[in-house]
Length: 122
Image 1 (cartoon, rainbow, N blue to C red):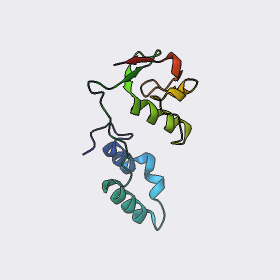
Image 2: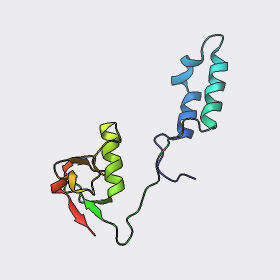
Image 3: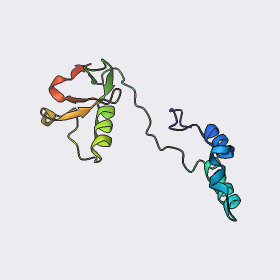
Protein backbone atom coordinates (compact mmCIF):
# COMPACT_ATOMS: atom_id res chain seq x y z
CA UNK A 1 0.00 0.00 0.00
CA UNK A 2 1.20 3.49 -0.80
CA UNK A 3 1.68 5.47 2.43
CA UNK A 4 2.65 8.77 0.83
CA UNK A 5 0.55 11.87 1.32
CA UNK A 6 -2.30 12.05 -1.15
CA UNK A 7 -2.73 15.05 -3.42
CA UNK A 8 -6.40 15.27 -2.50
CA UNK A 9 -8.51 13.83 0.32
CA UNK A 10 -11.00 11.44 -1.28
CA UNK A 11 -13.53 11.67 1.57
CA UNK A 12 -13.56 15.48 1.52
CA UNK A 13 -14.05 15.47 -2.25
CA UNK A 14 -16.95 13.00 -2.04
CA UNK A 15 -18.54 15.13 0.67
CA UNK A 16 -18.16 18.22 -1.54
CA UNK A 17 -19.82 16.37 -4.44
CA UNK A 18 -22.85 15.80 -2.20
CA UNK A 19 -22.98 19.44 -1.13
CA UNK A 20 -24.79 22.50 -2.41
CA UNK A 21 -21.74 23.90 -4.24
CA UNK A 22 -21.63 20.91 -6.61
CA UNK A 23 -25.41 20.48 -6.95
CA UNK A 24 -25.48 22.36 -10.26
CA UNK A 25 -23.24 19.66 -11.76
CA UNK A 26 -25.95 17.04 -11.35
CA UNK A 27 -28.87 18.98 -12.87
CA UNK A 28 -30.64 17.72 -15.96
CA UNK A 29 -31.82 14.34 -17.17
CA UNK A 30 -28.39 12.65 -17.01
CA UNK A 31 -27.22 14.36 -13.81
CA UNK A 32 -27.74 11.44 -11.45
CA UNK A 33 -26.10 9.00 -13.86
CA UNK A 34 -23.02 11.29 -14.13
CA UNK A 35 -22.88 11.65 -10.34
CA UNK A 36 -23.05 7.87 -9.79
CA UNK A 37 -20.38 7.21 -12.41
CA UNK A 38 -18.03 9.79 -10.89
CA UNK A 39 -18.51 8.50 -7.33
CA UNK A 40 -17.92 4.89 -8.45
CA UNK A 41 -14.76 5.92 -10.30
CA UNK A 42 -13.44 7.84 -7.28
CA UNK A 43 -14.19 4.94 -4.92
CA UNK A 44 -12.39 2.56 -7.30
CA UNK A 45 -9.26 4.74 -6.82
CA UNK A 46 -9.07 5.48 -10.54
CA UNK A 47 -7.77 8.97 -9.70
CA UNK A 48 -5.33 7.89 -6.99
CA UNK A 49 -1.91 9.49 -7.60
CA UNK A 50 0.85 7.30 -9.00
CA UNK A 51 3.64 8.30 -6.68
CA UNK A 52 7.03 6.62 -6.77
CA UNK A 53 8.35 5.06 -3.58
CA UNK A 54 10.45 7.38 -1.47
CA UNK A 55 13.99 6.07 -1.35
CA UNK A 56 16.02 6.36 1.81
CA UNK A 57 19.69 7.15 2.07
CA UNK A 58 21.47 4.07 3.35
CA UNK A 59 24.92 3.97 4.94
CA UNK A 60 27.49 4.30 2.16
CA UNK A 61 25.13 6.17 -0.18
CA UNK A 62 25.93 9.69 -1.29
CA UNK A 63 23.45 12.36 -0.41
CA UNK A 64 23.30 15.90 -1.71
CA UNK A 65 22.49 18.77 0.64
CA UNK A 66 20.50 21.76 -0.61
CA UNK A 67 21.92 25.13 0.42
CA UNK A 68 18.45 26.71 0.46
CA UNK A 69 16.54 24.32 2.75
CA UNK A 70 19.56 22.51 4.31
CA UNK A 71 17.94 19.09 3.69
CA UNK A 72 19.85 16.11 2.31
CA UNK A 73 18.34 13.88 -0.37
CA UNK A 74 19.58 10.89 -2.35
CA UNK A 75 20.84 11.19 -5.92
CA UNK A 76 17.69 9.38 -7.08
CA UNK A 77 15.46 11.97 -5.40
CA UNK A 78 17.39 14.90 -6.94
CA UNK A 79 17.36 13.27 -10.39
CA UNK A 80 13.63 12.50 -10.21
CA UNK A 81 12.74 15.99 -9.01
CA UNK A 82 14.80 17.55 -11.81
CA UNK A 83 13.34 15.24 -14.47
CA UNK A 84 9.78 16.06 -13.34
CA UNK A 85 10.57 19.79 -13.40
CA UNK A 86 12.11 19.57 -16.88
CA UNK A 87 9.41 17.25 -18.22
CA UNK A 88 11.93 14.71 -19.47
CA UNK A 89 13.98 11.83 -18.13
CA UNK A 90 16.92 12.96 -20.27
CA UNK A 91 18.83 14.81 -17.55
CA UNK A 92 22.46 14.47 -16.47
CA UNK A 93 22.49 12.31 -13.35
CA UNK A 94 23.60 14.31 -10.32
CA UNK A 95 26.19 11.68 -9.38
CA UNK A 96 28.16 11.97 -12.66
CA UNK A 97 31.13 14.23 -13.25
CA UNK A 98 29.48 15.60 -16.41
CA UNK A 99 26.87 17.28 -14.19
CA UNK A 100 29.29 20.05 -13.18
CA UNK A 101 27.50 22.92 -14.94
CA UNK A 102 23.99 21.46 -14.64
CA UNK A 103 21.28 22.63 -12.31
CA UNK A 104 19.11 20.36 -10.20
CA UNK A 105 15.76 20.85 -8.48
CA UNK A 106 15.65 20.20 -4.74
CA UNK A 107 13.08 17.54 -3.87
CA UNK A 108 12.28 19.40 -0.65
CA UNK A 109 12.02 23.11 -1.40
CA UNK A 110 11.90 22.84 -5.23
CA UNK A 111 14.57 25.52 -5.67
CA UNK A 112 17.10 25.19 -8.48
CA UNK A 113 20.71 24.65 -7.42
CA UNK A 114 23.84 24.48 -9.52
CA UNK A 115 25.64 21.16 -9.09
CA UNK A 116 28.79 22.85 -7.77
CA UNK A 117 26.72 24.52 -5.01
CA UNK A 118 25.48 21.21 -3.57
CA UNK A 119 27.26 19.68 -0.61
CA UNK A 120 27.98 15.96 -0.94
CA UNK A 121 27.11 14.07 2.25
CA UNK A 122 28.47 10.54 2.71
